[in-house]
Length: 263
Image (tube, rainbow, N blue to C red; front, side, top):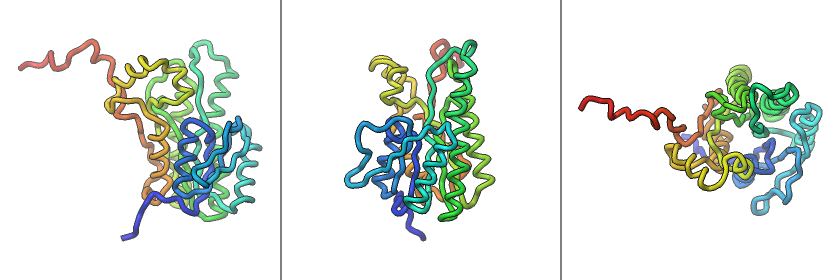
């Protein structure tokens, strides 16, 4: 039997939005697993992105611009001559009223969360096929794309779209390139805390999750490491729902199901 472990020795990875939050956790765990990592983001990191003596390469890039995506891929080709892993992590959206959100705002959210991952996947896929002939693409989606998403209609629609993109590209590009999406649940980061509120609010949210806590960037990173490794070599087209067990249905606050049952 072939020995399988979550090692990325000799692999080259690109992580979009990899300088902070979930992306930074993914970058760190990939470096720790032995991969060479290129991080691209719109804002420069405050400090060097490194784990022990392993350092990530940073490239300033707005993933909504195809010429900047090409710049990242060309750098990867020149620096390493190959690409094995792409993590489409860059994304997000501030809350907005669905009835009054402007067309410009809506298009910018769709561009960032749906169009950019498609274009990056196409461009990265070319290098994967031309170099090693194989590769893994991981799309960071959200449970917002699987249920109603009040005050985030464009974001929810984009994340639903990226799940379909995952399934479609896996079908078209397999078996050479595996494509997997991870639909993250309620994840607590420095940025999301602004939305979720103080410790008291976070505790209330956590109480509605079966696992008893909100997710962390490390939870997502751990799953990305598994998906990117040979341990997941038969996984493609999958949408991994990583949400701590889901969210408690609100109807339970109004109804006691067991109280209505006959003894």
